[in-house]
Image (cartoon, rainbow, N blue to C red; front, side, top):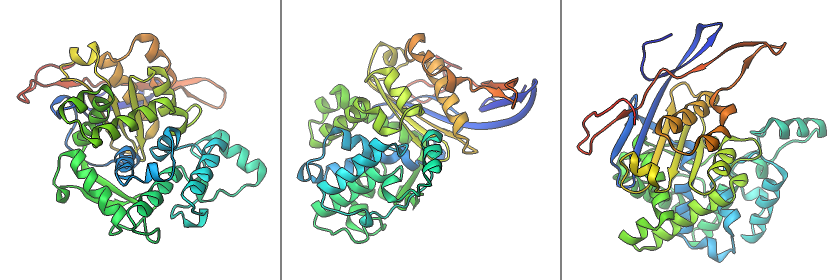
Length: 364
């Protein structure tokens, strides 16, 4: 259907309808590139896939302990949640812990990322407010961090606020980049959002997984290693807080039962951290594994299909585990009468690399 090696194709009756260009980077915890597709160093806006790094900056202010947050709160700080009642209520509880009001949040309300929630809101004639933002947990965390460092809440979302300066420093350190090599825009929720090479996003998630394994702590027994492990375990333990019922991140983490975390970024970026196992060692990883993906045209449905295809090509997880992602892997293309009209295919194969960076094989 196409000879391009870095695209995903949708068809209608066997006729190519759309092609979606894809970029992938697979690295180990030391940052070595193991597999790639397209441009693994593409300058990429991580969007909400950067939330665990932003949460690390919050943890390092000690605001987490000061205000009595728990692991589920931490998972919500890393979330792009569905605005389910449990997400809204937890946001309100977090605000009370930090002695803040909804009016202090510098994010706005928006339609839910869940169609089920949206239908309920329409029936109730409900107008979502700031606590309904899918990023509400991150914003409460920023307020807590700001207060913990004595910076005040006013303007906590602005790029030059001390809390955001700390986030920028932490993010660059996790990426192993000079701060000048990370670019910043403004996210949909009104906080700064970073852009950096795609393989550095994979590196962040490999570090999260390595910390959960304890490997990072053995090499660097620092508070940062402990905090990274804490973030990994919070997301893995409370996947329903990271997204919501039926959402890809939640289904993925439930299926892998603590072996991996995954996080969506808006406009089709995604990152996964995989704990060390026989599977990661077979792939040549020195310990844990990080995977980052960007779909060029921002199609999130295609993103989920691609991420699942990558897991299959790499052989991560048993067939029974990956089967739980089948509806995302091969989304149905049906018309209004339920007739199948086409499908999604993956003509690409990942390219492997030797330790010196030379191209090795087409796939594991």
